[in-house]
Length: 193
Image (cartoon, rainbow, N blue to C red; front, side):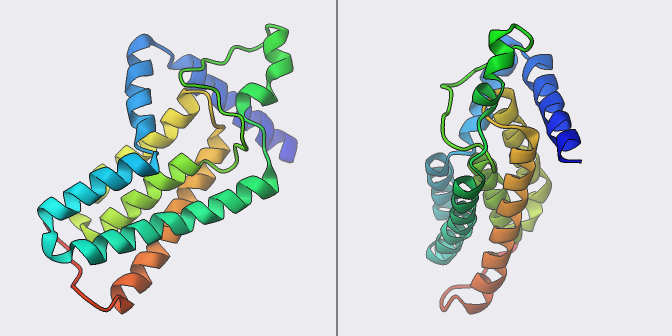
């Protein structure tokens, strides 16, 4: 059973990584891949919360950071336990034998692949913002989904890395938001902008 899942994972990876490859998509996917960076998201979210919801800034920003960090810690522990190779390393023999080609758009990553930390960050942030500002839920999760796909497209993650990273991001963020907005001592949650 595991062999079937691994084969399917590699097949979907190659379909996205090679099948969608184009110079335009390279640029688009690099931009979306940046949305998985905690530094980029913290800056954008912090600025947005400060501009549009200054009254609740400290509370919301604190809950958002804790939500994303909670998922990130869990992802880091799983990466150490599972220690799955990145696609470039995992398929090195097939690449050398010219049996597969991997489109590498960004600098190749060498540390563990499973689960995707950038996807966890994108989905964790989307869940936090959707929980806080429900009006934008569809847009937020579309951006997170494309960010996850971008991690496959740029050649650094398998689809299962992305799916598990996304699930961890959503669950961790939801739990932190659920308890954070009930027990955080000051401010009030703003539901609509």
